[in-house]
Length: 98
Image: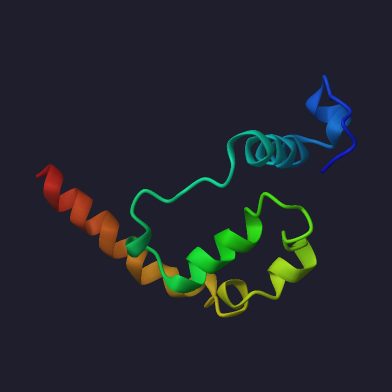
């Protein structure tokens, strides 16, 4: 699980994404796997994906390459499919303000 080396500078560690990765590794090592507060609100596919990401045992945790092949990632629709949803939410928020 990492080199055990403590980075004092985010740039030295490879930037913010590397810092977040190290922070996530530390949380897994010290606090165990985080739990969703309301798991039934999320799809089985997302719950499985998170389980693969958040394994406390490194040998069981999927690699980035494996995660990119997970059904949750490969079944994603194009970003443009979100446009109607975003417009709908914006419209609803505007109506609530009136």
